[in-house]
Image (cartoon, protein in one colour):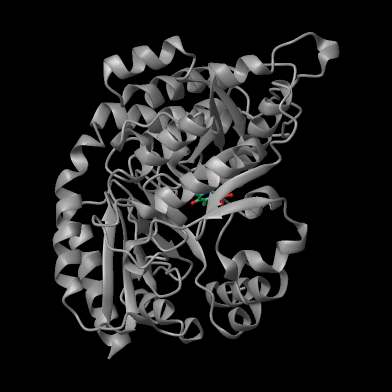
Length: 467
Ligand SMILES: *Cc1c(COP(=O)(O)O)cnc(C)c1O
């Protein structure tokens, strides 16, 4: 078979045998698929040898680029020891080392005094429960929060409070606390009970208010729900600072801190889903660090292995952990686990990734890239049909609108975001939009030069798509 026939065969087989996630396969079958065969640094290469800039970080997971030597080597070294062994009834070396590291990292972003006080109350994050992906990290958090109250004898806490436009993954527990109708409505009959609070979406405020005059009315609305229903609510779950899949919705300053305070006031647990925001994306190691917020439970995944391997961690406070201790017959065990929980290869990749963060002081070094992105966003905001631009660190969204003065959205069936993405792809940049929101989320390691190149391509793609 010639190379050429081989590529054709791969394309045919993709269309015949694969079912792609979040993809209307009828459309997919009519297009030529881009099939990735290699990558290096911030670039990925298709089977025909065409290179693209990986502007979505391979769906928000990649941190240090592809084929990063230290991570490659860490995985190879671990393969030579053991690739998998279970955490059920056994332990393994990389899983232990990583847990210690994650706890240190999660607690290192706060002021000393703050940490000491919280530690006394068992309220710093001190335990790591592994799973395989962001959705399972959230399932674990939900079950943990629910069972915590059961153990305390509080039987009525069967509901959760989440936000409109929230995204916490695609398994049914995660969908229950989701708030994106287009994805979630179809499954409504299968879901458990939740209360929903307004999204902190200033550009399209549900309460028709304006920040800062609103005095965070959206948080206050959550406060009302909590004060009325706290006896039924096990936990509030939210994406700290950025509701990513909801459209890169950036919460106004003080919102997260206010929610945390409301949870304390009403004695409801607070779950921070840092699956998208974690590992430097927002300009701090974790988004919670920006507002000195210590959640009761924190969900991590995506960037944890630098985007190499599926791995997730749900971090909990000692207070929660202790509620599960008891005699065997008390049945206080946390009955949850997966076949690949704490997989040594994934944990080895994560350890290598965290070492690079330390060695290169990655988070501290992001400032010039963030500044470049913010300058670009400000310029873009002046263009016709660019309704709103928003970012936290290197997570950014640019919302396209049909009418800038009324903020009227393009009908979602018009796929404006996709028009931009396709034009960008023709010019060598891969992005993935969220409805009418163009998402900018490059790997943290992207050079200033490559970032400039990416933004240049996106600018032209936006201009041609809307004209
Ligand atoms: C992506 C994401 C998830 C789900 O992670 P998967 O690994 O895709 O299951 C959960 N929460 C947030 C905030 C996410 O962005």
